[in-house]
Amino acid sequence: MSFAMGYEEMRALLEKSLKPSRYQHSLGVAETAVFLARRFGVDEEQAKIAGLLHDCAREFRNEDLIAEAEKRLIMVGNIERQMPLLLHAYIGSRLVTEKYGVSDHAIEQAIWRHTVGGAKMTELDKIIWFADMIEPNRDYPGVERLRELAQTVSLDDMVLAGLTQSIAFVLQKGGLIHPNTVIARNEILLNR
Image (cartoon, rainbow, N blue to C red; front, side):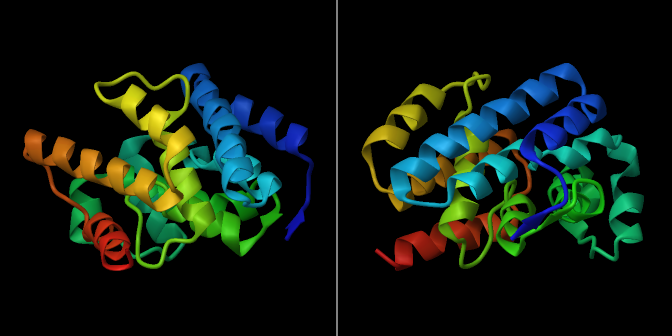
């Protein structure tokens, strides 16, 4: 784990790169990730930095995300071509090294997985994924219940509830379910 700049430098650079509401969201995810890391005994510095930078690639316009991914040799699947916004997670995992000087596989992986999850998610992966769902600026039906779970149940039970709610929401809208989300949910169920 090494960082070419300190947290405050990262924060200032991120603030210049994102629109104000996205920047505030990023601060909220960092704060929530630290709370969850403390609760579950995960490295708080990794959680704080991953939470802060999880959306760093949102500096790019949606219509540019496929090109940005391809430029970084990131495979773009059919679902990502249909929903290019998903690519910001993958691009962000590379951008943290390119732009923010973060050399930490765990942080890179947590950022990569923060939108759709994946197989064999680590505790940090789960924390960033869930912190993104419940940070204080989020407002949607069911978020208060998820925030309550963040204080009372196990990490896996909390993430399982979030994945289930996320899948149900996408199904209700008639959208595509990313296979990694299904894998993440099924693994929690299979490992109970």
